[in-house]
Image: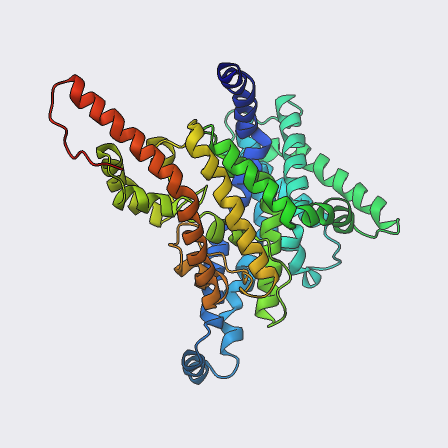
Length: 438
């Protein structure tokens, strides 16, 4: 029975998951949105600077810059967060065109033009920054993917303006992009005219009402978060990078929710969203996918078998920075039925405690600050909640919970390794080194 099940996973499930992980549109979506990540992190640093919750610090900065120093400090915040959608529109088209081996730069530029054309504005001074930022992410995805596909079609069908070989490559590429670029702009222009003659009013309204709101309701709910987290750790259980697959689909929702919290935090308003990208980066994935930080410390300091003691020297350092591939493939957890149980169960429990602690007001919501996922726990919880100690406390609680869930399974693996070492030493006539009873 187990062989049949294993055969089904190896022959049916893993190939499908592998194809999904390498699907060019999902990869372009993931990488395109990640193109904006450096800007978001830079903006988050200035957001912390402007809102650091220490009165003495606030008074000191006000003495230097005047009463409006916080506003001045937030100029970079608006300049970085407010172009998230614009950067994604370029990046998604760029990486999709690159996967087709056509000029990615021209594809990205055409996508930006289509993205801006879809936004309802009459002159440059009327550009709504919200639609260039997180509110425009879904629109950026659609126009990024579609414009790249149209561009690729014209290029691969040789429907382009061809220049002589003597013309510099940069000029030749520009002329090659004329026909596909014209086609994209005309299509979006006609679509905008059509939509503006309806009661909906604009293309962003169509995308928000038809796609954005339903997906945000699902992805931002407790149930939707559970499904997403389960998918991440389930795929990792078979050696597939679940965060890349699920993140490629859910990133627009979670980053949009993050930025909505950021806007409310800057305005000193009630934060609207519990589920954001930071919930997963800073409160669930403590030590990496599967919430394995406590497990790493068990292996390093509580193991009795020589194998696990040796592994412990390798896993603690990376785990502190939420990198756990040494545990996933060294213990291993991947394809290990015994360890898959706590690996799947622990993040579900931690997600539940975090979500409801925030829902009931015991823990502050994330403030839209993009704390890098490699930031060590406790520090990241404090920063992600805008300087609230409750963020660090819930992380500590989650680490303790994960310890008690993983501990019996860790002990079972440790005992198994001890028995294997004893048997090996007896068979080879060697003294038992470091033999201990569990």
